[in-house]
Length: 165
Image 1 (cartoon, rainbow, N blue to C red):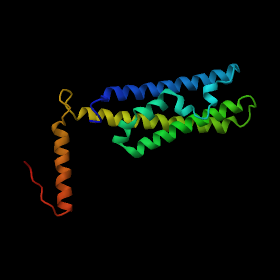
Image 2 (image 1 turned 60 degrees about the vertical axis):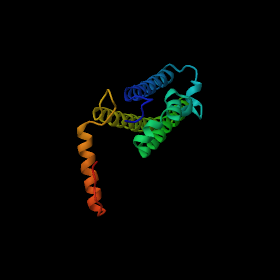
Image 3 (image 1 turned 180 degrees about the horizontal axis):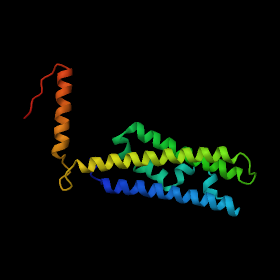
Image 4 (image 1 turned 30 degrees about the vertical axis):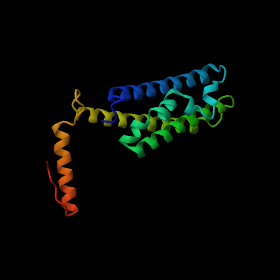
C-alpha cells in the first residue's frame, strides 16, 4: 500500500481533480481565444505549473506517486510543466494570431501525455488497492503468491537458499 496516512481512494480522487482542473483550464483558454477577453494572469505566469492545484499537490502530497514509480512521477512533473508552458505560449500569441497551429499541436501532445500518465498512476493505484485487504491493509494471497515466486527466482539466480518461517 502506498501510505496509510494517504489512502489510495484519496490519491485517485486527487488525480481526478487534477485532470478536471486542467480540462477547465483548457476551456478557459478557449473562451479567451474566442471571446478575446482579458488575458488570464494565471495562464501567463511562468510558475503557473507550481501555482495550480495539481502543481501544489505534486509538491506537497505527490510523494506517494514517487514511492510507486519515481521515474514516472518525474515524467508527470515534466508533462505538467510542459502543458502549462504550452498554454502560456498560446495565450501570449493569441493577440497576434500567428503560429497557433504548431502551438495547439504542442498543447494537445502535452495534455495527452499528462492525462496518460495520470491514468497510468490511477490504474497502478487501483491494482495495488485490489491486492490488499481493505480492512487490514495486508497483502492478499495473490500478491503473496507472486512475491514468493519472485523471491524463489531471485534466490535461484543468486545461488541463495530461501527460508520460510
